[in-house]
Image 1 (cartoon, rainbow, N blue to C red):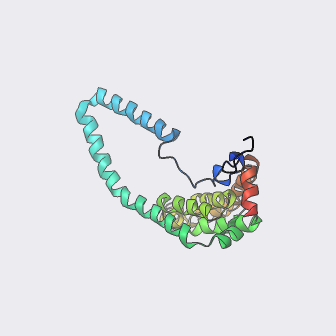
Image 2 (image 1 turned 90 degrees about the horizontal axis):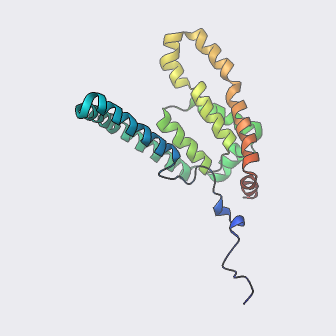
Image 3 (image 1 turned 60 degrees about the vertical axis):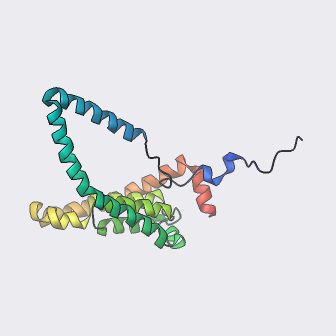
Length: 203
């Protein structure tokens, strides 16, 4: 009667109790609630100033904008889902995982620099990489590289407006930043989630 039941494993040792970041997402979080409060306050201010017609005009315009964005959001989410199924976990973990060292940060930086598309493409791809074995550092390097170095914006916007010399020097100066950001992200992750790092190293 006093023996513990074998069907009750210790929750602290359960690997599923601490899933990899990005694997489980809550449909409603603090950021969603905060934005919803801001929307409600803004709508009340517009209604007070312009009445119901002003609020309806904004809603109509935003619904049209939302309809145009939905296909890109769906495409980006599907892309991330397919990538997480296609990419082999072992190769991704070896190239971009916690033990990839400087090589993983450089690969993430190079991938982010050449990755086309906007946030609807980049963030689902980053989430998929986290799911299949990439670590925080490599994905941070990828996102920062896409933000600072991304060739698509440089060719389409920066070179025509700012000129070739400015763009080249800006890219050269920005090159170390994704690697440094990825290294810092890896450093912080190891200290904030030591148990997760140990579990990932054992798998």
